[in-house]
Image (cartoon, rainbow, N blue to C red; front, side):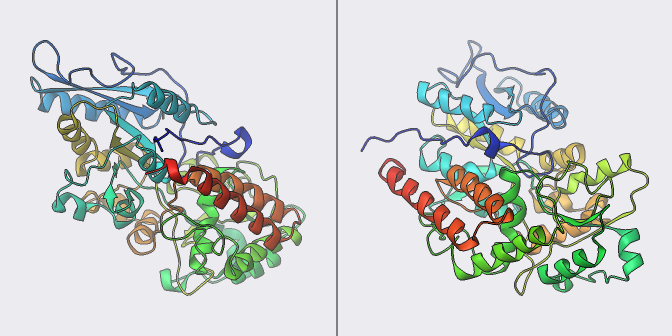
Length: 444
């Protein structure tokens, strides 16, 4: 069967993304550097022999200065040989960026270099929107990448993208409340709270003015980003290793048990189904089960909040950390992959990912970027670094991720409002497997 470009878009409600998730974009502002054309260069070179390379990235206001700087650096270093032009595509709270990618892919006018959110790598690779780069990636470069990014960016044994940066959550708590109740603070990652322990603490501290914990970051992608580590920790991955099957995984006995444990927070009024964006910061919740590490800079706006951070809670023997952020690949419409990879390597090298971390607060995606980098040796960033190096597991790798994440969010919200966990997760498994069966002949 002829391959179809297949990028399923989630509903607006399911796609809503808060700035605390690994998939966040802070939308707005003017594009500072735009591509001269909408897609890849026709012959890969200008009249003077300079090879033109085009690139798309989401319009993330926080990150634009860093990307502009690295594009400028690249063009200076390769003056007379290569010239890179970047265009920033608005994303907002929906999938406007992915909509444009889908349209451009169908029309054959994608840029040479295409940025994409980490969980979408398998989808884009399976549908031929991006091409393998395994032959380009040196062992030295690969060994410098965080293992979680290598796993995320690989599909069917081929690498397709390289990460700009990482994302990771921590467990935040109100220090005044914890001191008042004499709660212990974990001494290391092996000493992290269990989810059962978190429940007991939430039950003890909840008052009419303050719930025990904030669990919901947003009602879309934030649910799978924030909660899938608890399922993985319990030994309950949401899909099979090859991403082809959800039944027996997302609705496994351990998965249902984890969902029921989370449901209990809402049943017992220890968490709100509709928390405000700053519920924890406003001291209306004593704990926060997730929030991207770059969230800590926003705590400065709440001087009365005395906060602490520790590792994510575990549901099994070990902590599992979420991870995954934006990556860069070569599109199917690129006419000169050799030239494009030179720019891809530059935009994702150690110096680049370190700069992205300094500007945006996101963890670097390369090990070497942490060397002599005092920020990531200091609390609480050191906790995030430790989780990424020791406990990071990417979100489910499947060509039908966009369906999985939206249906998972719907199911968890149903469960949190009283639905039977097994029935809800059975329905997700059936829907996701039906979708995979529908498209399997058209995916790579």
